[in-house]
Length: 187
Image (cartoon, rainbow, N blue to C red; front, side):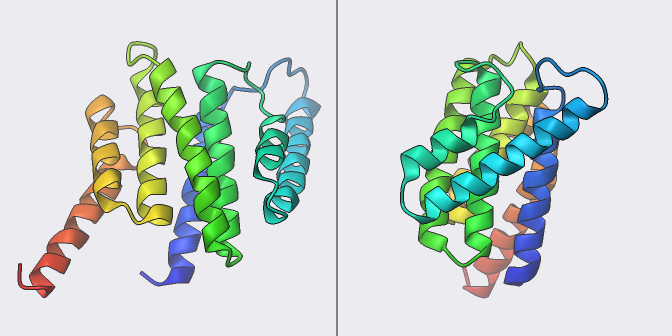
């Protein structure tokens, strides 16, 4: 897979997964203008935090980005929303050629997503927990090159909710690639 198609796939995954994970997360919405206002607020926070990330003010950048969260702080949903926003930022930075900064932001996303998995219980909603594990796996694979971690997280997502998201497909693709690579290397 070439870099351009990989980035397009990653961007699509982040947008789709983030939208699915955030569906219904806005508080106090009334009327058709509310979703547009939420989107505008999130877009402004994203632009402002991107500039802060690029100026190496990582803590303020993260605080600016997550200030637009719609879920209450301290909840699993807030951590998931934060993690997916940071993931989107990491892919944006990676796509603009800033790999080291993208990795630093991806690490922050992983911390937020890991916190979400600790706060969620599988009894709450296995599909939500599976989406978070899929997100962690995707970051591991696409931004960090941690294929063992990606496989472990995709497998966790499939175990929790086999029909949710893209984890089963991503896991199968990852394993197929590993098998093909092993054959090429004579293992």
